[in-house]
Amino acid sequence: MNYASSGKTPPDDPARINELRLRLSSILGADRWVHGAFPAVAPITIEEVSKLLKGYSGSVMVVGSGSDFPDEFNPGRDTLI
Image (cartoon, rainbow, N blue to C red; front, top):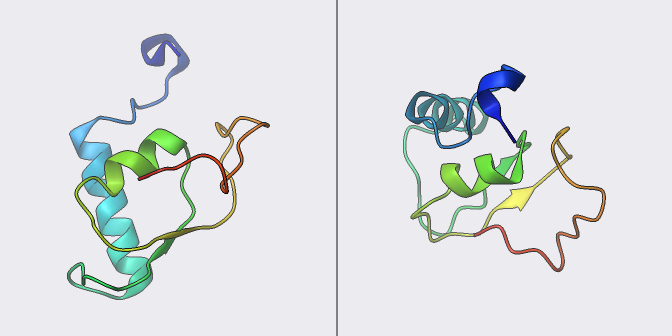
């Protein structure tokens, strides 16, 4: 995808990653990541999930599907982290 011509923010944009982390912390009402917790997020793209959770070693439930998820996406088959 050509993000420059689409007007979308690239999934690896540091400001976007920070925004997603803050949004997730707000949703969870948490001020830190806790090993063994099971946060849930409704990501916009698979790439955003990967960037958001990079380095996180706990389990995560992904709910909903964003507009950029391919029709053939299978959460039981496709590993996000």
